[in-house]
Structures are given as structure tokens and as C-alpha cells.
Length: 72
Image (tube, rainbow, N blue to C red; front, side, top):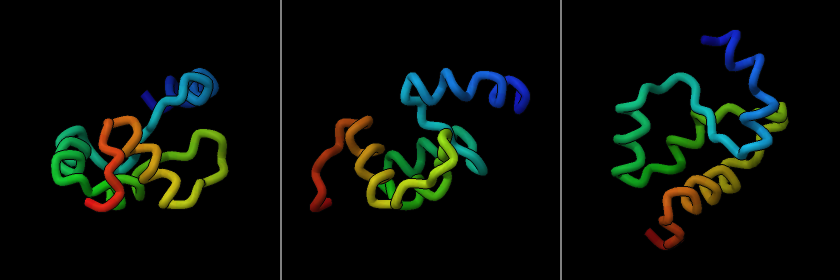
């Protein structure tokens, strides 16, 4: 599986995929249900090598899940 990831990471980046490391599906689900985007952002793998600011990752996660309310 890691070889497949490295072989296709250009495609993942071009398609705007969000890739997580160090967390399983249940962990992702749990953090999404509790809207803990800040914690989830620590598991995001930067596909282009440059890690964006946590606030930028949180904004991306919020926009992808449809939760754009920044006060909650």
C-alpha cells in the first residue's frame, strides 16, 4: 500500500485529495463528529512537501465537510 501511495501521489495532489497518517477511519470519523478539525489537521499529510499552517488545513477540512461556521 505505501508503494501505491508514492506511485500515485501526483494524482492525489492534482485531484485535491486529503491524506491522513497515524489515524484510522474510526479516529477520523470521531474527530469529524466532534468537529475537532484542529486535532484532525495534525494528521494531514502534505502532498507537495510544504506543510500549510494549521489554520489553513482547518479551513480546508471545514469547507470539505460543509461546516464553515468559524465560531463553533
